[in-house]
Length: 455
Ligand code: NAD
Image (cartoon, rainbow, N blue to C red; front, side, top):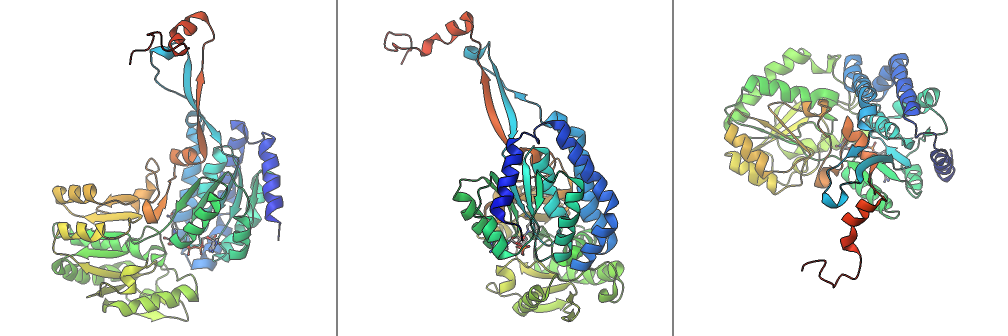
């Protein structure tokens, strides 16, 4: 196992050498990664299947294509994004130049999570690299096949002095976090997010924390129930609900709940056939520990739909729970699996009260044709993102930032926001040293009490 202090020291030396500064060097590295996704596609698909039994189409769309699109977008725009931004000036600085120059922080630590183990580990890597940093990547040990593959292929495609991968579990990550980094980007659960934040704080290291939470899904009677149900089931069953922005629970009236349940039965059959377990489109729960945790959450309410589980195969069908007690664990902790509890509310105002009493989620979903009610929800609730009339799709728009707020995280990334995240925005004022500039700025010189400055 490599020594974390040595790894960080090597990366720091590489950063100091200035190797990552030229845009041409970063563009070459990004192009190499593009080639990697094409040449190693089969290996990536296989690793994702081994870890989560992801079907190849899902692995390609949700992980590889996502990464490829991000790289293409970054390669297309990097030159423009990295340029100095000239800012407005006042009279006193008329002859001077004022601008913002993005500069890399230095050595960045990227800690990935297991649920989209390739995408969530390498997407921040793209941003950190594009901004000119040296990077240490720490994949999640839970998705062991993907972690091993990342460790194997990254050194084949990018500069080994500037970008390194270190695998390991909690003890290794704990050791790693004792080192001084210039930026830490962490994806994972909120409890560990606090550990990472505390470790970063010892060195005043800035962080992005991409955390989780319970993303609510409000549906009212004005929504087209068939379309809404289709979109919600797709979002809940993609990666078996193990998606940070999966709809966690439904908020609706009893009447909408009834229609949802009737429709869900038909949609499930349409999507996955008569036997969900045999559908090649459905993955599996990542490990026995998570499966047992999910099985425990089923206790919280009445199983109104589904409930079929197979511990041996770590399979669970979509399970809708109704009449759930407010203190049930399924309504307290993030579900992160194919269980969908329903919380009944009488109207939008009651939904807003419910949301305001809880932690700020990563996403809020609203299905409604009542514009005034949608506005009420938008204005009176806080969440990392909102998607009206669909789920998850907000994160595909790479001109929108992706990130949480409060308990669901801090900071964001995707597209240009990734470059911003991994760059310090240095303010530069380039003063004119001539006589006119000196006259314009003379008011600041003492003595100040001779009436030069009115007060
Ligand atoms: P995980 O178990 O893979 O942990 C994430 C990382 O933290 C791993 O690299 C792991 O090694 C490290 N880690 C775990 N325990 C640690 C400790 N005590 N000290 C230091 N490091 C430690 O993933 P997870 O946390 O189970 O992931 C699921 C959670 O992540 C969910 O809450 C989900 O919502 C959230 N998530 C958020 C996003 C997002 O983009 N906001 C994306 C995916 C997952």
